[in-house]
Image (cartoon, rainbow over all chains, first blue to last red):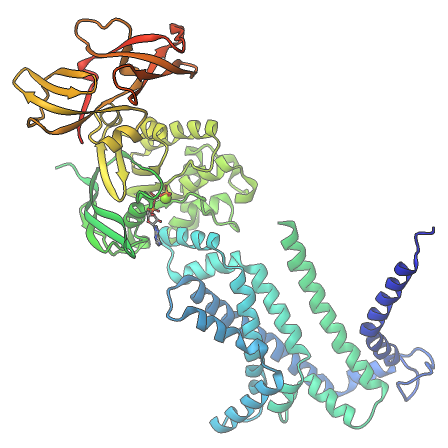
Length: 263
Length: 358
Ligand SMILES: Nc1ncnc2c1ncn2[C@@H]1O[C@H](COP(=O)(O)OP(=O)(O)OP(=O)(O)O)[C@@H](O)[C@H]1O
Ligand SMILES: [Mg+2]
């Protein structure tokens, strides 16, 4: 038992500190969403679900939640579709300045959401496109498409190219190659990029904040709520947002990464 | 007129400065099993890609059953390709893989699955129809690829080193199966390999390629026994080469000066002018050791330098006594007991001597 040297104790403490630092805020958030009282601050007065009831009864919050889901699903689907088409084009066809095009497609990954949001705001203003969920959705496609492209492109190898060639040889037209061969072969990548996009779109704030007005997404509505001060209801809705993100990641983990490990 | 399945005329194709195909013309009759044989980089795959439509040649034309296909896309050609890595569709069952080509041609589900089963029976895989490709062995995958390519009844089936990934035993077995299947379906096969034994075992016609050109072309026996170029003689099996100079040719004999004296060879069809340089090519199994019979051409005396036992026979490396530096390889029967250091007389039957322009 002398093995527990000072060093290993130190590293255990260090690990605890790291995980505490990462997870403590979330734990506090979730814990006080069950607070049986008016303030989400210690002491914890008892367990109650009434703030969740309040959230579910709040029409505006529920509308915002639906908006968020719709925006997340549609913008993610669009990002995957565009990312897939771009990856297919760049991986399979002779294009001028291929490296540059690939770089331009992934460049938005390095630009901050604030800059992208402001850029879109100015552009939409200039084009006369009003602030709306559609505008926010377009914003989410802008941030997620590069990610989808990068994930899908990385999975398009030479072996797959040969399989596509075989399909063409057997008479498949280009759209048939894409829908019957390439997409099914790449489905883990497509699925992964879809769910990652969903998680990013789901709790994205700054772009939605800049580009929506009357109908807003859930993070924006939560921000509105926060302006009138902290109360356990904000904790409850925050916990809901967190819970749904966790579910998305779990689906991703179980369906995609487990599958990939097995095959 | 017998239909030509494939008729390619003066194909030239370069990658940058490098000529991968250099003025290649080739006619493949309908129903033939043609093998493209050549060393790595000789342009076999390039030629096959041109036939399959994956590559449009810079010069020349490709006719398939008399129709110009030079720049027609693979999907619209009456050819199918069997790829070396099989390229099966990993997400589809074996039956769906085989039926894919028919599906693309708008054949109904029931009909195409019936045909797929027919093809799978042909290659002996009817029981595996609902498995996925990754559940099959290499040899089985290869058969699926064959069935898939044949299911659409192509005019020409192109096979690029189809047996390259298999171990030797399976390879020999698949060779005879491929040939048997080809006979049964009657489709024209064009098969690429760099294995000369495979080429001889399987081909009705062998096309020997080197540096983007066709060196030799004909039935295996002809190409082996009477190769028409030095490259072809050396690539198709072993040969000993001796250079010589033509002294004269009259209606009866051709006289050639060589390092081991003047050879008098009964005249061939080909006419040589005096002074022209030639190369004599001799197969190991044609060199006779021991006192020459009256009809054989004597090649002098040599010392056995090295003997390797090959199972069916011994292979002896001989060092010629008069011409140091000249090495001959001769085959000795199993029971021959050749001893290293022995001196032997070497001769060859005149019909077995191959004379090539140098
Ligand atoms: N896409 C390409 N770009 C540049 N050079 C190429 C390309 N494809 C082939 N080559 C060159 O052309 C030559 C012929 O290639 P090819 O693939 O036809 O040879 P091969 O006879 O099939 O050889 P192997 O037995 O190795 O498959 C080779 O020297 C190769 O390096
Ligand atoms: Mg090749």
